[in-house]
Length: 297
Image (tube, rainbow, N blue to C red; front, side, top):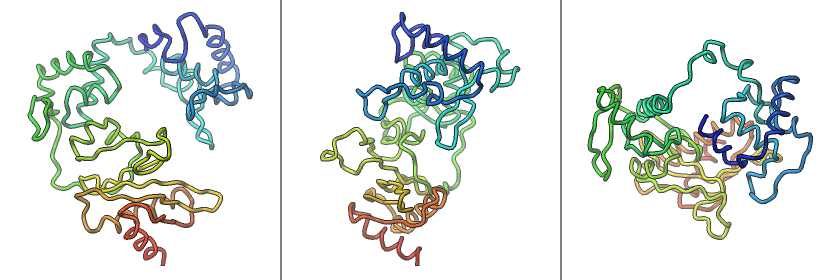
């Protein structure tokens, strides 16, 4: 937080934004938890970045959250973030804790990353909380010295890895889910490729004619492998979940289409959509369309 404030985050220069910062904190203090839309009162948004055309108010709120001046109280029905003062969101016992040194903060973040990953390289452990590998290395060394991490070699990996002492290999992995492009399983693309032999790039910023798999593609995790991917769109006007393309991975098992159809049915359910429609694009699409029709019958 101190580092972020020192460089004024990613939105502002060191010499700008002070008046807006003061005004927003005062406004939230007075009115309580608020969204950016409520606070900027219709001010124009920037137009230079598709998908991230945040108003100046929204950018400042993001900055104030990242520096700890504001906290996130929740979201409204439109999924917009509601910002509030930290003391109205977090318990006093949390706020009263003494600030950590930078080294201690990195140590705790790497410890948590290692516990979550089970096994990972220094780059994996650093990326989990978006810290620099150079800052993570001393923390990894300290955790090795204390016995929390064990240096190991993972077959097929070029870099040394570190195993958390509490990591356990399950007898069987029972998983079936569609992953967000921002899910920790696939967020660090190099790790996803090393673990699952799954090459993945989000293509929403790629021109349509250059997209390989689609606009908003979700990987499909089945068991302990990523076995496919689908380009999905929720067409709320017609209450349909549109599968705009469906692709299998080389190692996909024979029941991939059936399992994916069941997962799509679950997704349509929690989205409140009445129908699943599969477009004829992708090598998995024909079999998936048959399974979807069978489950709907």
